[in-house]
Image (cartoon, rainbow over all chains, first blue to last red):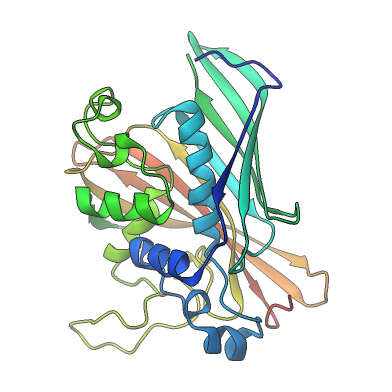
Length: 134
Length: 161
């Protein structure tokens, strides 16, 4: 595929996060921190209003935006910071924007700014990816 | 954990993980798809190596895992601090470098070492303690597939949000 600086892609990666989504991620990833599935522990142990999603669930959901856009094996790097927690009821939209395209050894490498926002436009994940695009 | 642990990759685990992140690209779940065939068989979602936690012997965030030695349940810090802990730990950052595709049938070896540690003053007072852990996933042919760098943060007081 051909990409140029300024190209963008965005998609809704999850609508109305619920506890089943979160529990399914816990089971698949093996991260059984009770803050993500036990409301009483989330409240008593850490003072949260409820359980919240694993940061890695948000990163995984955001990864789908990248693999749908760029292909399943195009990524060379993918890194994020977790900027806000994701709560039951949230809807997340992942956005990518090409910020550079470089030729390295005959391969086209695109650098992509990655941001995922919740339904209030607040970012929950911010980061960058590098993908081989040609 | 200098010697690492074995992480055998099987198709069912890849399917479960792909479903959990709502990323059911045929390249991850359908071996007969053109997408899988174009990649030498099924491959794995970008964050799939997280599920190596199931095979990590001293993984801290699975308090109900049955253990043969009936050792006391682990609490608090994950090894290297990267995964956060219970209550006062959070996962701050996660970074991957992809060197070689992972396929079901691979037997990966995961080797983790601690990275940098640093402190920051939190916005609501109290120190934030950051620590990195770096895990390399190498396949049965000795090929490095993924390098993962995890940054965890511990707060002196429970997170106020």
